[in-house]
Every structure is written in structure tokens, then in C-alpha cells.
Image 1 (cartoon, rainbow, N blue to C red):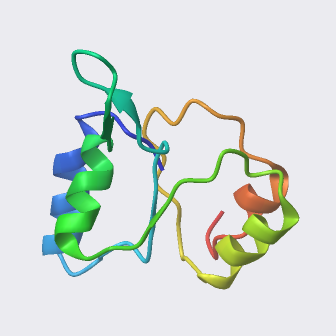
Image 2 (cartoon, helix red, strand yellow):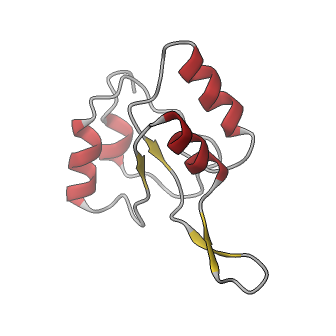
Length: 98
């Protein structure tokens, strides 16, 4: 979870070590460019796309349906890097090692 540039090498290192994430959560693509007409993905989103890792871009983790999808991933751990949103308790408790 997160979007800053410093998270990209961490993602690649996890992938190369055989501990590839089951999914990535990133901010939704947003307008950018000179006039704001280009829709741009975060660097983490682009890196995940290049590795074939699914990317989620929820606007809120409070939606029970999104929480259910996240729990269904059966992640062992969650790595968070400068995420910027409060994560609800069901999300924090869903990884095997929370």
C-alpha cells in the first residue's frame, strides 16, 4: 500500500526474492501533465503493472465489500509505505501476521 517513488525498489526486491505481493493498493490514477488532461498512474502502480501484479485503487477502505475482497487475498503481511489514509481495523487485522 502506498505510492511514493521510494516504494518502487522495495516492490521489485520483494518480487525478485520470490515474495511477490498478491496485490498492490495505490492511489487512483489522477489528472496530470501540463493541462491536467493526461491521466497518470503512480510509480508503484506502473511498477506493479510491469510485474503483472493486480492493483487496487479504492477511494475508501470503509466499504465492507472492498474489505471482503482484501481479506479474500489471504495475505500473510501487509507492507505500507506513506499510504496517507487511515486503515480500518478489519483491514489491519486481515493479514495472517498482523
